[in-house]
Length: 564
Image (cartoon, rainbow, N blue to C red; front, side, top):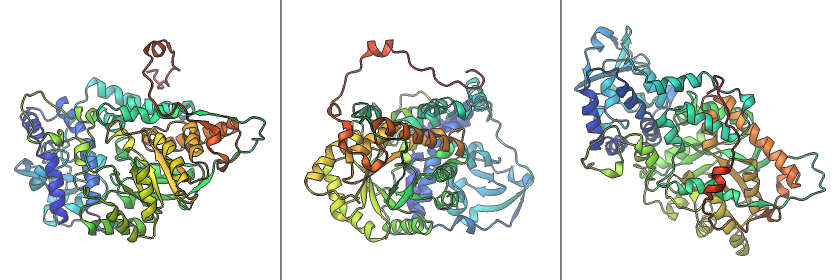
């Protein structure tokens, strides 16, 4: 059952005629070390990473990573290198030899990476994008052939000038002491990530209106500061879902952190934990849930983001695994019943020009976006959410709520909270900014007597400053509990810097919060209420003033150590 589901998923990604044409084009090249081949291999990273994480989520009943038994059969390298074609494809990863011949057509990252690495050592490419234990836990045992004796050849990748420049920048990252705000991390990431990784991280759906409005909406809310208040001492700490946290924000779930740093979600876990910040773990993480939980700092809190599988037994096992690994809450994703049309991400995977129609244009040329939701239950209903609540003693919240009546339904069926979110603008474009939904919903629900100080309304999307966080808290006041999630900013901070970058981002936001609280005239977060903000301009859109924008002289962006 599990393998059938995964075959269906990956065939949806790999059956695209665009991928077949790409394979024919690349495999006919006389040199496997060409720059074009290197670009294609890079282009498969994000799609393969997400699909591997999909597999990890689907097959939640696989053996634990520490139970994977080492292979015993010895295979001389002289024998291994003979199996180097699409019809006879052996690959070695981490010293083990695998027969992937039957898996080529199902590979979520396309056929080309496997075929090009046939008879070669693919360890570097594999470890960059797959959670630990993926191949051991999925590939049939008779295809796990043994241990390689000797050193296998590796594909030589010829770097173009753009890639050389990117790698040089990675060697000249700005010192952390020079980073002033969250935007600095974003700018650095835009320069040092591969084009594929950057477009995957930064993209939104279609015209990216919601992506931008998520942040712009905060700029339409203004403060009403109090004066003559003793603010010598301010406290940014609070509790979220019963867990103490040093700040009212948390690391929101975001996929494929390994594309930005080798330690991926594990370095985010360590950085967040050392700063007393809660981490929400994505179902599509590039490390397994076990590995991220193992990286947790003692006493730190982690939450799990659940995508509901069509197979309810898998849902039960996944929740049980999250409980066993010490997760403190389950966030059920409710805004991903279909893939978002993330054209910026998709455009990066178009590898050739042609005028043929794709067999299945909805797959969109093997994009990361195309792989993600293939196994997700499109029939998810309120009754199923009730059933999920009954399966666990952990708090259950809905992630992706975008209207007032759905918040009310979540309250009525016993959810302990919701996350107002539009998936960072990556799903339905022109969905409302979450802060607008909060400003609209809180007064309505309060008037109906629906809000409880213990009910949690979390919010994510577009948050870049301490002021953004305080505005969200002020809208709700003490009528409910508010937490604010940041996803992309921590991917960007993790890129290049790892744990230290994550900690620096948290410290920047914490210091902004302290300064903003003093200037606002509050000592503790529970003093915030709607009297501190002016939301009269929130509902409504402003046309861009190009003359003003063209005349505005922005602050110089942070420079790399080599002056570029």
